[in-house]
Amino acid sequence: MKANHFIFNSKESISGNTTWTAPSNIALVKYWGKSANQIPKNPSISFTLSECITKTTLSFKPKQAAIPFPSFELYFDDAPKPEFDPKVHAFFKQIEIFVPFIKHHEFKISTSNSFPHSSGIASSASGMAALAACIMEMERQLNPKITNAYFYQKTSFLARLGSGSASRSIHGKATVWGTNTCYEDASNLFAIPLDDTLHGTFKNYCDTILIVDEGSKQVSSSKGHQLMQNHPFAEQRFEQAHQNIQKLKPILENGEVDDFMVLVESEALTLHAMMMASNPYFILMQPNTLEIIKRIWSFRKDTQIPVCFTLDAGANVHLLYPENVAVSVKNWVDSELTAFCQNHKFITDKVGDGIKMV
Image (tube, rainbow, N blue to C red; front, side, top):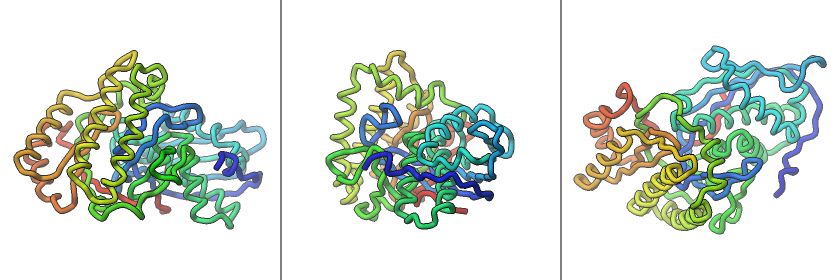
């Protein structure tokens, strides 16, 4: 399939509003490095989350002729957020060829997160996924004949153009994005769901996110992806990701929790190792990140409870574990790990179902 499959030629104007929620996601096999138009250098697999969501309301009306495109006002938590404007502006320009009707509208975007922004939880993923869903709802109003399958596929396609990982926030409970030899329907243009092959153990998997740092990251993910272009270990990393997709597929299908923990932790540490070996190099983990990781390993060894960690491009730690040990993990987090979290803050989350219309 080619990108022009998603072009919808309409110049109609309508008025209205629509509200969608979109979840963040946590990659198990990491995507790090991209080509033009947000094409990934390697495939990735992620869990879709449930509680870490962005809620976006898009209000639209016909644009006055004299107003340049794109025309929008953006509010985050009910207040103007001008620092978000350049990314949204770039997103509208990137997608206009596929949804040309947006050039004939003015927009008001009202958005909020249920979790800290820019701190290593994929807020750009949920944010762009929610906005893409709103725009696709506009297209559905203009073209009611589109199928649900097309709606979700194009939403993933559009979201990818705003944030690569946003493509994985459309579906639940697990998704794969990027061509590979294991999933023949996988595409670089959009993510596909893995629900039909996902073992029941992983359909209810839990994710407790330990907020080591609520602040913005020192280096954006976009900058980190750019640094992969001349990275000395880039090709080896891309090949490793393909190999780990091959390893993870039977693990997810068969519910092999022990093998899951080894692969997921290795992927997380590899991601941060690539950052530390970049030029310029950078470190997003903090001392409390490392302390939490050491305590996870000790707890798992002492109790045999299958809890592991993964990391996004930030300092926060995602604890991943089966639902049947949730009470034990919660007690341990309360008694031992919150001391290493900023303001003792953590988020209790689990595998979820993707975008939803409000």
